[in-house]
Length: 190
Image (cartoon, rainbow, N blue to C red; front, top):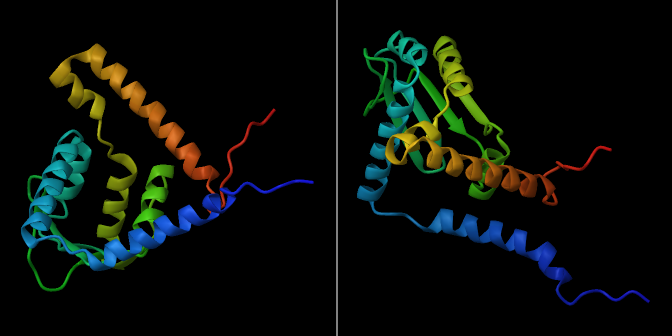
């Protein structure tokens, strides 16, 4: 006679509990405005750092100078404007030329999708040409963390750390793909 483990409930209840806690935290926690503002400033600086490594991306953005781009997810709203130099500047404007709204409400589901390497589901409103340029940027511009790290600690240690990070991401993607309810399974094909 097979007996059920007293901890079998945990395999089913913990993911649901984690999602409920993340949702409650997301709806009830509001960080101070200055924290949000500073985090957004850092994010724009990071995006510009990544863009500067790709001249084609900067040229494409420079052609869109002055356009008003609005990114929206839950309560977070970010307004950006391409500059004549092909970088991004924070904007404060009414209306938009392009609005990208992330439709995934759960931070856990959004993080899972990003960990799998999937693009989040986005509702697009506005200028089709500008949306095509932004999509090109998303598809073709990548941060070379190993190169940035090599400037700080040298090539060999940066390569070793980057290789370890890639292995960790592969393991994380495999774990996320095997979670019940994701609809994805990884297995060995023999």
